[in-house]
Image 1 (cartoon, helix red, strand yellow):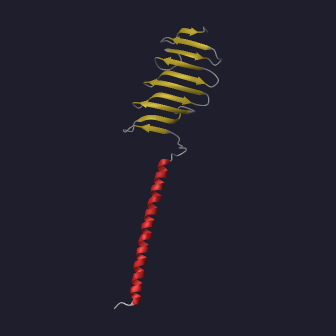
Image 2 (spheres, rainbow, N blue to C red; image 1 turned 180 degrees about the vertical axis):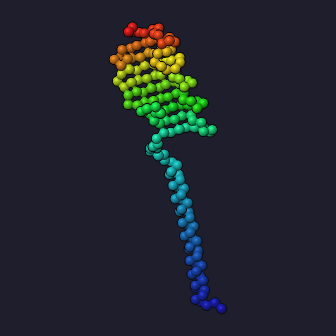
Image 3 (tube, rainbow, N blue to C red; image 1 turned 45 degrees about the vertical axis):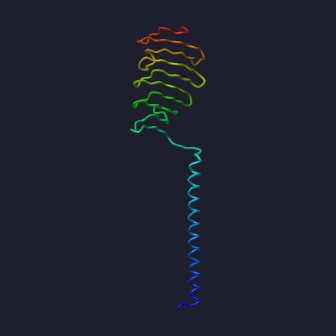
Amino acid sequence: MTTRIDTAMEDRLTRLEREQRCWRAGAAVLGGVVVVWGIAGAAASAPEKIEAKSFVVVDEKGQKLAHLGPHPDGPGVSLILYDGGKGRTIVHADANDATFSLIENDQLRGALTARKGKHAGLLLQREMFDDKRNQMGFFYTDDGKPMIFVNDEQGKSIVMLPQQ
């Protein structure tokens, strides 16, 4: 036989369980909103700065396509574009020089260069870069004078303007 106190307790317990379910549902909805808001906020805003020593782009086989970072042979920074695993185009800058180089079979074929406060020029090359062979160039020298030259296979000047 249930008493009036038992019925009141049962009613109160039922009401408390219903309120607890409402609080849990509300907390779950609020938690979901916070998670979705956080994800949407993270996806919508890009970082202001990304810092790294270098960036390397590779293809699906892991072969290097590009490298941006410190120049491998000295000071400054370089962007190297690769083809078949070999550097083909190099953009390099340091405190004194800016150079755009075209490479073929690991050999310099052409370069556009500017030295800070000094010369600027275009160098075209048929074979390995050794300062003497198979070259032609158009430059402003360090003293600001224009120069055009063409060398033969032995490095002998065919054209040198102005004459030196």
